Length: 247
Image (cartoon, rainbow, N blue to C red; front, side, top):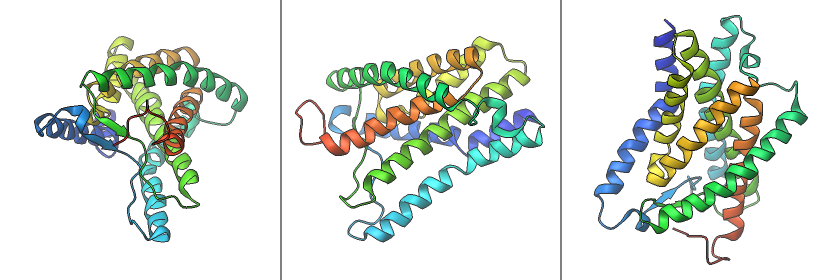
């Protein structure tokens, strides 16, 4: 029953994203030109020139993406584990979680940017366009909300929930680490080989830290900060600095 439950949760969330990324990567490999000549676009406009309708679609997308997180919380609560508190996603240690998350983000964020630039220069990565929203008043708040949503979905499901279920199914710690990290790398494969390798390495680090601390909170904070800097930083710097590729 646990195995079926886990597969269904993944099929509704990051497992489906991994399959989508594989198909997208196959399309990029077989398209004319190199990977660096193609773009992987995120946070795109759903209704150009209609800002209120666009905002409605953006908020709808963020809210519906969080439904699998709500499902995981329900399953953990029904299990008698106290919901998301079972994986350390709560407000019991906000200062500690934020402090640890900030340190993790500082270390991984800079390294990840260098890896992306190097992979793209080597022709192993698409040009990542973190945002392509119109310049309206809600742009930055939506980008921040999108970053927090990404962090919540990935860390709660691929770290907290998946590792808990794999442990209950009798997987070894190293096998669970490999499965979680490989899944994280795969659903970023739409960005290219650099995105796959970089996120798989990030997954290894996050699993080890989760095993040490027993809390998703710091990892969620770190991921949210990394994405906020990426999304908002791109919105501010795109076209203004020469070292940042634009699609």
